[in-house]
Length: 263
Ligand code: 5RP
Image (cartoon, rainbow, N blue to C red; front, side, top):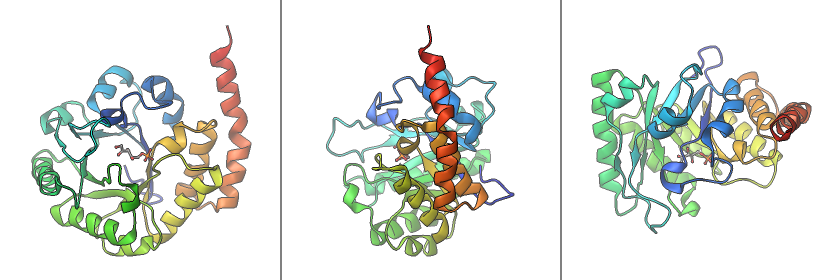
């Protein structure tokens, strides 16, 4: 999942449906995912999407979301359990499994014990575990103090990779987490420049990459966006260079829209 040549990773997150349902522009997972896969090092999905919408001939490594049990209809999203067994993950031949933890919530202990059990099972099967420091609806929790705490807990329990949010003073989060960190994008940002700045700053602070969804596939130019993020992640591009890659590839998105709307 982490490319040995660059030590970095671009993971494409498409697992939102497990609690958000048919999220905007991910209503038809296959349609959204297929054109982006050539540019992703890893694809994050649930087993339902993996079995129904991912062609076995596409050989991108899979990060399988294995926690769930809550939906956006509930105020508290933290009441999650493990929804997919390690045996099933092995049967699906995935590269790693992912689980959310909810530090500081009413289900803090439950989510941390879920992580601990998953890590134990993972060692039985040789399966790495990615812990996601989820904040539910409380997006304001995304500050360095909280995220450093949540990421450190995840690493101490044994997660091999931690996924978190970018924040001001992100190096505090990186320095306190003794395993590789990737950042999510969160809800759609206002502009491509904002996305590229987030990715650039996260890498500069020591993240090994991104596990990003909405800011890629909710974009009007998803292919151009993922290619620009790839340049940041794997080619040491600056934000200015990423914008250039984005501009150069916008026509590819346009061609794709034209070919799918042609009758
Ligand atoms: C869904 C997730 C997402 O994978 C994660 O939030 C990354 O996606 P985005 O960049 O859209 O935030 O964990 O629960």
